[in-house]
Image (cartoon, rainbow, N blue to C red; front, side, top):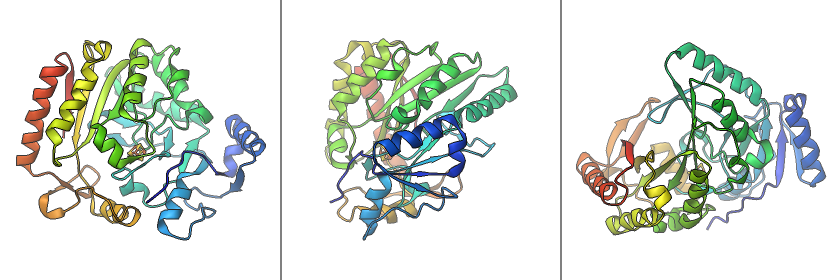
Length: 343
Ligand code: SF4
């Protein structure tokens, strides 16, 4: 069994990061804390991560923080939740067995933060300019869960305030984590939609290792609503496993116990059924040999996704059954919420 820990053990600097004030500050702070410090000429060559087995290397990679500079002048598109990805970090310290990042980041998913946020935000401003007078929506969590590293960078807080100042810019954030204290007093001007990724309690317990339990996520969501952010929930991945209807009904009942959330007049829901790629399946089976995730290709339909690689999704009949059940749950427990998409 893989042991989880959010503690950072070593930090790897790209030398260029030290040319930025945040890079310098982090270098001194991590040295003072006595963490292992390494340097790498490229974030693709992080060779200091130890481990005698694939599992050990994976755990050690999750405890490795790369401090770097984001150089690309290109922002990826981000369907269906936003127009563009706004990369503030990559990966996260948790170890969800189904992690959607396995396809891209494989078995060495070290966490990476960027010290050149001003340049990233300038780029976002250019993208906003190109689309005006239309509003441009950015997703801050497409390649990471941005909350666990916020204590090092403050990047999310700065981005939220930056978007607050953009008449035509909007931000969407999603997290499974709960440390929202430094975000509550920000001048966001209603331009950020803050969603929590949640699931049935049993799914969280079985598959989302190293993440806060459902009750803590809902408590953090309440704080976010009280701070005036637009709220949302992503329920993902939705599993068609034994007892799924009772488990997801209990999830809706749990949300409904909080009137500030359940009766909010602009609460959004994003509903995503479980899917996997061949590459992710291989990684999952290596890292979690006893996984109970449903990964049989024969029970799925193969479908090409937006990045050109294929995914195994639930067959249309199962998907329709899940969709109508979720619509029923939303009508019964969150009648004011809007389902943004179901996939
Ligand atoms: Fe992956 Fe999100 Fe889980 Fe982190 S919290 S392991 S990014 S699914």
